[in-house]
Amino acid sequence: MSDPPIASSLVPQADPRAGYRAHQAEIDAALARMLDGGRYILGPEVEAFEQEFAAYIGTRHGIGAASGTEALVLALKALDLGPDDYVATVSHTAVATVAAVELAGAKPLLIDIDPATYTIDPAKLEAALAKAPGRVAAVIPVHLYGLGADMNAIGALAQKHGFRIIEDCAQSHGAFLDGRRLGGIGDLAAFSFYPTKNLGGIGDGGAVLTNDAALAARLKELREYGWRRRYISDRTGMNSRLDEMQAAILRVKLRHLDGDNGRRQAIAGIYDYGLRWCDGIGLPARRPGGTHVFHQYVLRCRDRDGLQAALKARGVGTNIHYPVPVHLQPAYQDRVALGPGGLPESERAAREVLSLPMFPELGEDKAARVVAALKAIS
Image (cartoon, rainbow, N blue to C red; front, side):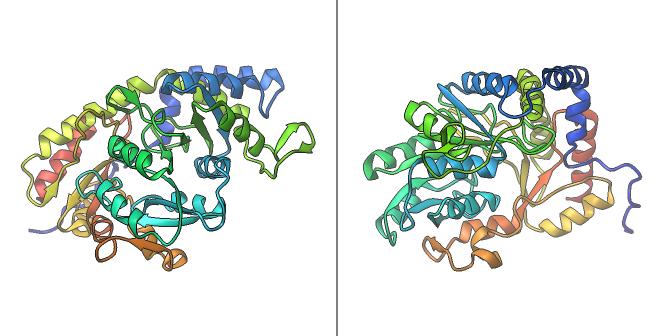
């Protein structure tokens, strides 16, 4: 049978413009208010968003940052890590997670993932702690694709071994685990507001959340040159400030986050039902006691590259999150990766994962079209 013709209208894998258009009147009004106010850096919009977002997640303090990567850097710097300290995290993640560890002056210790959830495997973490080449001062569990890591097991290990926990929540805005929102469980949590995130701005932005007042005060100093008093640096800091424009936009979108996540979950339900018997495809797992907010809807595929090409020919956009684990990337190949035989599950995931179209405005009709395309191929 000949290949089908390339479709004239693509079903995009993501569409950040749709998020703006869905709330355009509110966003435009918020921007007009911000512009008219005349404060464009660390003004009332940032202060209000920090309070509103912290209250939404369930923490006492929120500190805006210029990006999700810098939010991680600030969180790590707030712990006063030394150059010989290790930070354990996963290799199956956006490289930003590992880059932040090194930007903060510490050393990454890369751990394999649980193959069902793609998040850090607590058993492999515990084994790595026993043979780490130095002190593991912190662990960054990455809540990936919208599903939380096993925070109960990681918390038990933290009590036993004395490390701090920084949640990487770049893909988990609004998700729950055992009645608590992700980002309110560890010592610190870093969020990204990149435009395609569940809570996304129109540009870069990030935030660090914590319940620790001393850490919050330190973070506020670190994000602005180490200032306690203006122009006087009491510690070495950096310039990482969430701007007023992004804060104004995020305040609008935060009000709609739960509804948007509900639409993501409804799209995931269409995929789950329609693809449950497709040959050669594994569907996303769920975690008992947790909610999945589907930043991405990720399949496992025996022939990932072939499936991606066939979907493209039928007008369905896809993406790969992530095609090369960090420990195999040219810039990071000499970093310490601990696990029996290396990180085989991370490497297998990189060969097999495929992200389907997923954003709140996708709609049931386009989700059904994606299902029909997959059924025709498999």
